[in-house]
Amino acid sequence: MSQTEEFGEDLADFVRRVAELKSARSLPPDHLGAVLDAAIFELDHVAEQLWPTYERLSADGQPGGGAPDRDEQRLLRAIFQRMPLPVALLDRETVVRRMNFAGTALTGVRAGFAAGRPLTGFLVHADRVAFRSQTAAVARGEGDRSLVVHLQQSPGTPVRATLTALRPGAEPRTAVLVVLQPSVGRAQQPPRVPRPAPDLGEATRHAAQLDLADAMTTALLTAPPGDRAAVLERAAAVLHGRFADWVIADEGAARPRRRTVLGPPHAPVADVRAQDPAACPLVVEAARGGAASLQVRPEDPDAFGRDASGAHVLVRAEVTSLLCVPLAARADAPVEGVLTLFRCGARLAFSLAEARAVDVLSRHMALAMRREGGAGRAAGR
Image (cartoon, rainbow, N blue to C red; front, side, top):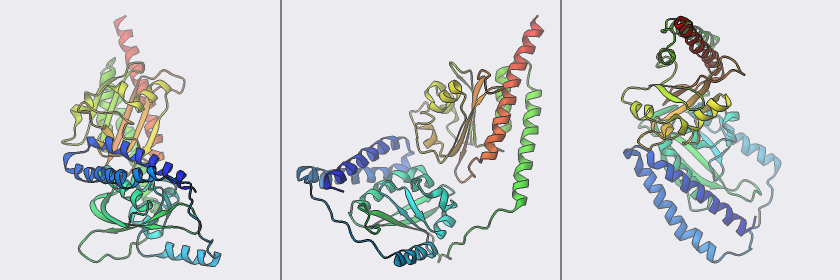
C-alpha cells in the first residue's frame, strides 16, 4: 500500500471520528471529560501527523514482511485462543478480527458473533469515542495506550483496556491487540467459559411470554370501546417494566402522533413525549413501509432522532437493544401506529423469539384499535 493510499485512509478515518465527536455532545456532563480529551487528541493528530504528511506526501511504499511458517501460525493461533487473559485483535476502526475464549467469557459475546463487528458496540456510549480514537492512534504507530472502559452487560465494573500495535504476517496494515482486564483491587481469577443455558431457562422464558400474552389480551378486551388512545395506553402499561424499560406508542401512519411514553424512574420521559415522531427515522420507516426493526447495541445515535432538549434519544436513554414494530392487522393492511420498545443497561437484549412475540401482539393491538372503532360507529348508528 502506497503512502498516498495510507494518508487517504487515515484522513477518512479522522473525518468519521470527528462526526462521532459531534454526536457525543448530547452525553451527560459527567461523561464529557473523556470526549474533550479525545477531541484534543484528534487536534494534536492533525497538527503533528496529517498536515506534515500532506506537505511531504510522496509515492514511497513500505515493503511488506515475509510470510510466517504455517506451523508457527498454528502455534501462535492456539496460544492466542488459550491465553487466560481476555484478548481481541482489532483493525483501526475497532472491528474485531479475532477474540479468544477468555474474551468471549468476559464480554458475554460469542466469538462468531463478535467477529466483523466493532468492539465499541459492546461498550457503553460514553466510552466509544475515546476508545475509537485511541485505537486509531495505536494503529498509526503512535505508541501503546491504556484506558478504562465499561462493558454494556456490566456497566458498573470498570475494565482496563491495554492497546498495542501488531503487524500480522505480511499484511500491509497494522492491527491493534487489546487486552481487557477488570479494574478491581483483588486478584482476578482466570475467566471461565460460560456453560450452556439449561433447558429450564428456555421453559421459563416461554412461560413468561405466555403470561405477557395473557395480560395483553385482558388489557385489550377491557379497553373502552372506540378509544384508540386507550388501547395504546393499556398495551404500553402491560409491556412497561416486565418486558421493556421504555415503551413508546405512536398513532397513525401518514402523520404519526405520540400517544404514550413510559420509561424508567427519573428518565427524561417528558422530553421524549414532546418529540415529533416524524423526526424519528425508525418510526417513519415502520409507519410507511410496515417494516419491523430489531437492533442490538445500535450504532447509529440518530436512529430514533433527538428529544425536545436536542439530545440523541438512544444515547441519553443508554439503549442497548430496541424493537420498533408497525401496528397492522396483517401484512397488507394499513398501519394503525408504531410501537417502540427499549432495553437499557445490563438487561438482556431482545431475542428473536421475543421479537416474534411482539410482532404477534402488535397485530392484536391493531385489531383491537380497528374493532373498537367499528363498534363505536355501530353504536352511533
